[in-house]
Image (cartoon, rainbow over all chains, first blue to last red; front, side, top):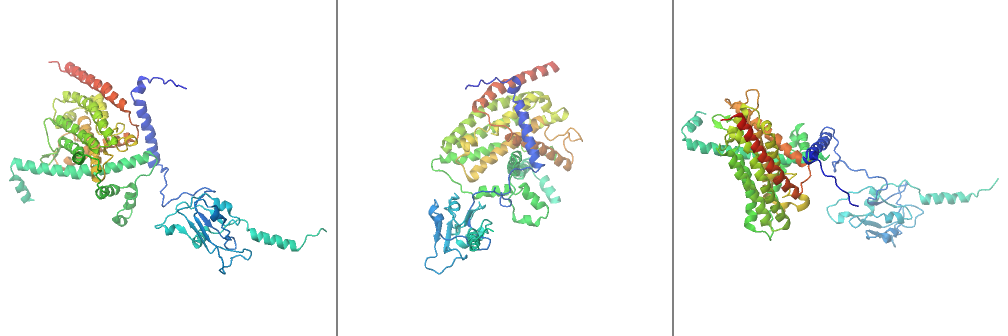
Length: 185
Length: 368
């Protein structure tokens, strides 16, 4: 479609309306910023964005409400991780016991290389134990590459407690409920 | 004190002239122009930030700020220390000379960009009198001709930089700057002719004296003022006519290949040219160091009055510089052909008409 442009009038060709318009717009913004304190920018290191719910930040390991490590070292996240950022060392022959009575294993070491991580969220999606979650941290910094490889201890400390359903506790209670078979009166 | 007086009374006229001129040059250059340049950059950054809903530079915190209880944080918020950091940074950065440049021209181009802008300041009367000294570095009889002759040299810095850099962006910047120069220099020169027809003298001090007796020339010659203002924007490569630089199109234009203090020299040159243009406008159109009340129209008799005159001049000049800065963040860049069109087909004829009109009016008022 060809739009025919109307010729400018003499008044418009004098540039005066655009000058006045520009003065008005810039003046308005100037006054609003200086006297109204309405700057749209944020003073970053001091003030930080609160990212919205569901933001895919750094993946951390979580504990359940009882304070036990949820991860059972199944290594599904390690397998699914596209950039191979996760490395899990399973307990193997070592006598390392899981925190929870009803879990067979717990990882001996769990490392996420935050330099490789692409924050895709596959690990969170694939985890059968709801043990790893992408959380709200978006500004990860370190002075060396080694510093950016987060180990199990650090991931658990940063991850905190997950307030979701405790899968195995629920199973246990279900099983207990079956001991007393409900009989119809 | 007596010894100093005796020393000066014992000097011949030439010796006294040399001493005082050197003093004036040093004070004007290092005491006024360079600090104003540094802080004009800060004002530029702050005003642009405020117009764009930002905060602007507010980080530089030298060690002594913590000893200033209330004022310190306010100064930091206003970014008062940023120019110091900028200056230091310019000196400490690597001065990189690309392998493909024409070395000699590459080295002298920044100097040529700065020197004419500073020289143009020499003829500007920035005050009436301080003691027995006239507050103008060189009170030339051909003041305005000198200014136009010198200011036009400034463009060689840019053209040379564009040629010497041997890169397409710089080259385009240089070409644009020369084309822009020839389009506006003529209109600018012709716009001031009516002023000197009214005043009857080319000496800038006489122009001020003329305005002190009557109205400021901006009221008598508004068309000349508008042409001069627009041409000054084009001369100093400021938006809306910053085609030689044109960051969005030409990376950095003529100074793309420059770094460190050489780049800073172009910056100083640009802002000094801004100062010179503002000062020129104050002298030609806004009555220089005079104010039409409180007896400030007469040449100073006391020391305080002399200082007051300098203060008046500087405040008028700073006001015009803020206008320069404000306009930069207000108007978009002109297209190349629009700029040439405006120069040749609008302003040159308009300036000619203005000259004829002034001549007719003068002839009608004073028929001899």
